[in-house]
Image 1 (spheres, rainbow, N blue to C red):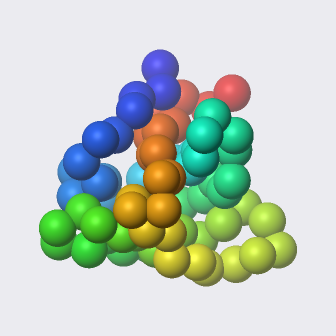
Image 2: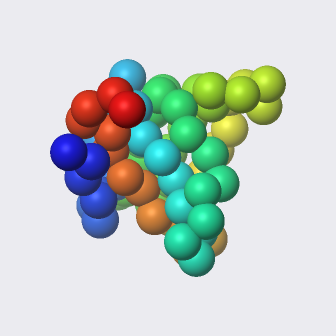
Length: 69
């Protein structure tokens, strides 16, 4: 079951997540790092976009993928 993560500081490196904005998928991949206050995370994306920084203040919601589909 996938899990909505409100507090990004609960995420750990290598967690697989999907990031959404206004209900639309904007990125997915493995967490590479999280700011201690949970304000941002680095994501190694599953696409050619590579590693990117995402800010929670940009309206991004994180869903941890706990089971491969």
